[in-house]
Image (cartoon, rainbow, N blue to C red; front, side, top):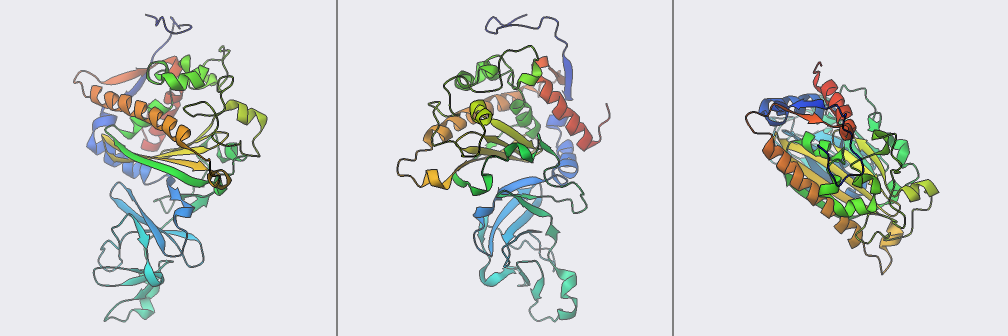
Length: 377
């Protein structure tokens, strides 16, 4: 069967098996994923300018782990488990705030710690000689060009960026560390976190789900997410002629970033993924970052950020609405089909799905997932 709306069809296509459906539904599998994936990989947690002063902090929850990310007195960024060393009480509950007087104070018995995690005081108890043994549980935390990442695996030898696809260098010409947060948007999806990634990695759905996006990127109208998937395509992985950026008007909202090459401007979009938690889409005039955190086997939290140059934001006529509105529309369209996908796979006879040739990047994602989970083919 062919679709009369497509330019060509592959009548001899071979379908590849997808992952077994229980990997999207089973709460036990979800717990295994937390241990094998989410507690072992570098995860995006926010922008460094969210912590302008020493003592400013944000909380990040990953599975049942609550992590404090704070700026220390020396200006560095540190991360700790949100756990007092006395009897394990949570140290703070609000999503963000400020540790006053440079101390992290436990609300239960008032043990206090420095912004570097060292134990400072224990009321009615002298532990001065042993204080070094009661520092907060530290979490590896690194910054890259204004982004903050953490890794709950203290024994990991994987450097931040080693698993980035195609690599951090692809964004070298964008001034990521200088950009400012212009807008953020958070929402929950009633679907498994892998379904979100699978949808992101293919454009087989694009002609029917993203008509406005397909007007901007002709390759997507051909149901291809990248020109690598069809070596015979004459369509480039780039925006259409006359399109400047991903906006509701197709026009850029500000001048191109000054160090971009002509090819980068003409492409109109440059993607980078840092699995399992983040992808970045860099346009000529702004950057969009999307990050995810699983909440349950069938629930995922999505966070999107729009970053703009401070020079553009300072202009009286600066209006980011066309960029924000366009991306929100695409996210909403994806959210609809992601949740439909989750609803449908609960059918009793459905054991697994199949991948078309247009979904080759999903197969690579599944290989990555199997490696994380030690699943043998």
